[in-house]
Length: 68
Image 1 (cartoon, rainbow, N blue to C red):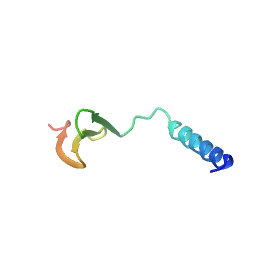
Image 2 (spheres, rainbow, N blue to C red; image 1 turned 30 degrees about the vertical axis):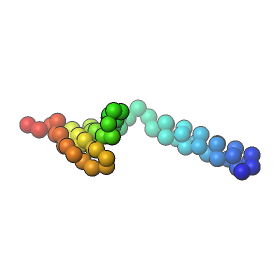
Image 3 (tube, one colour; image 1 turned 120 degrees about the vertical axis):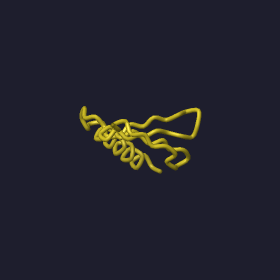
Image 4 (cartoon, one colour; image 1 turned 90 degrees about the vertical axis):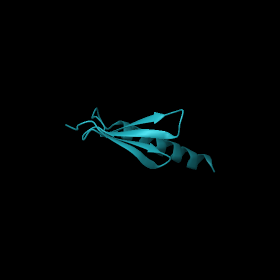
């Protein structure tokens, strides 16, 4: 790889990073909680209030925080 290709790749990565960060102050729809001591994570849909616990790529539990 020559220096010119490296520089173009680096500048492209910086541009993508800046574009992703320029999304504004909007709240994201999903929040992800990673459990570092196991291979599971929880994904929360902040609009519907539904959370899904995922273990090794499979949904193992579903919670509904808006249930009445």
